[in-house]
Image (cartoon, rainbow, N blue to C red; front, top):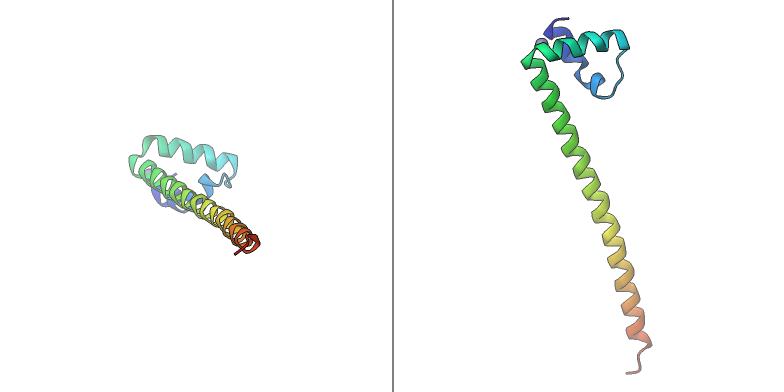
Length: 83
Ligand SMILES: [Zn+2]
């Protein structure tokens, strides 16, 4: 396999979406080719950071929801207190 054949398969390899025969060729090439290995590593770290950001966004949204519940709750409490 040549580098030109490897590059279009980088995403598929990370998704485990290439057939086993090609994957063996792919892995053998990446082991001996630092350029493709770097590309694969770079792509992987980009994916990790995107996933991390998504997780943080979900976390942020769920903590906002908690905050909203708490605000509504304390407002309701204040209304119940005698003036
Ligand atoms: Zn290569």
